[in-house]
Amino acid sequence: MEDTPALAEWIIEQTADAVIYADRSGAIVRWNRAAAALFGYSATETLGQNLDLIIPEHLRSAHWRGYEAAMASGCTRLHGRATLTRAINKTGHKLYVEMTFSIVSDPKGEVLGSVAVARDVTARVEREKSVARDGGEM
Image (cartoon, rainbow, N blue to C red; front, side):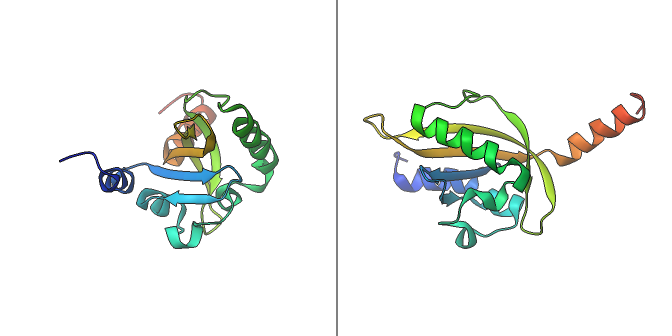
């Protein structure tokens, strides 16, 4: 099979981790099936919406400062390294997610937006917190 736009679309849609692409303004342009499962919003509900949909209110100002800096500079502070952060789903439930962020640029190097890949690590983080509270005993 040759490399086609359809193949790229199938890969994104069938990836096990949430894939979210937002344009320079932070409007959601791409939301795969795993993002829908993780955050509870269908692609139809999110497309064109602001990323604040999944960012807890207390983290929004820091997020937007970082996002705007990345859009201006063309690089992220983490340089592709995963980071643990909080997110919220459609019901308002807070999640721990491990995310990587990348800048998406066109062939001329113009920044188009950002892609985030996320997975739910809430159970792992809560287990680790429980072990730490209990003095390290399992």
